[in-house]
Image 1 (cartoon, rainbow, N blue to C red):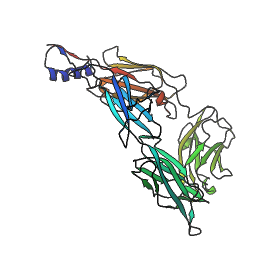
Image 2: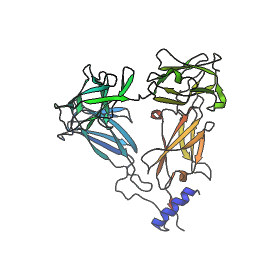
Image 3: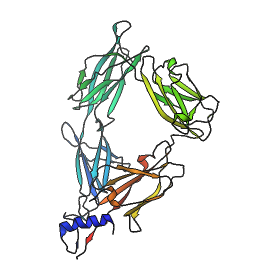
Image 4: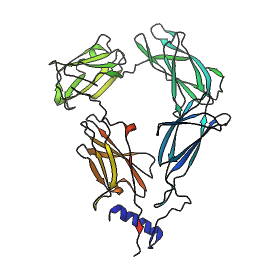
Length: 437
């Protein structure tokens, strides 16, 4: 008898006494699946929204609401279900519904779930203007071509839309949701060689479809421009490829020398490779090539350095890797035939088994979720030469009725397999019977 069984027996004995019986469900109805009912209603009138399309992200299926705005999804197993809901003239919504077991012992009771989904009509209009203060001429100028964002919350799809100011610095949003708090913000941009930005924002709130609001003007001021790595070509490198790192701003030429390092097979400076570093004609691209003329095929290299903009802003690149003759950022494929079964022995409780992916990986990350948890948690890593692993159930907590696992392979750069394609396995903890002594 293992530790988990002893713990469960003691806990059950305290509740039931020393009689011969099995823990039973105190609920009236025993069932292992539940129905999910969604009713889409107009947020203003609370009338049902007919012909709303409910797309299940979990099942990759779409159903349509009836004349009352109702959709009934039957016989769903325990778990979380994500939906994207859309309807003509309304802003699309995102929502998650959870089905959790509420039974006791070996009798499951999965309740039916009913949820009202508030749908918001689109058609609110907002207009505003944007200027910037030109330090060289000491004057206010029209800020044209600036990206402007309207954000209205993570429960909407999309949760943010954008537009650009026209030649007069005017921006307009035509189809914002009614009755929803909307935040208008402004992207940092460059005029001439200088960067401008603002922390100011504007709000739109409580307007109905067909109404329009004119927002007060916003003035941008010069800032130290944000520098960040826009793109690179490290995804596919052969022995003669020149590394190209593209940044968001013009870089200072005298900041390139002695600010970059490439190492082979390790991030330690002891493995530094002699390289030539320069800026291209745009002065936004740092180019790096080996002084010998060739990278060594089959090896992984690591890049570290700092790019300085002409206004003093900078961006740091830390241990970015590339593999010569391969793709360093390749996403590993999934494990196959992942199973969880009772351990065939006397020490552990369960054994996870799987078939390894075909390509070379560095190991696996194990995630778990018990029936008492709302989210998956990281448990630990497993070496790449394992295709099975045994565990005691008490390693993951106590007093739960089922546990699910997800196993994600990862490569030498720590990149995991795609979570969206992973398949979880679930183990139901056996019911413990208390024997009369």
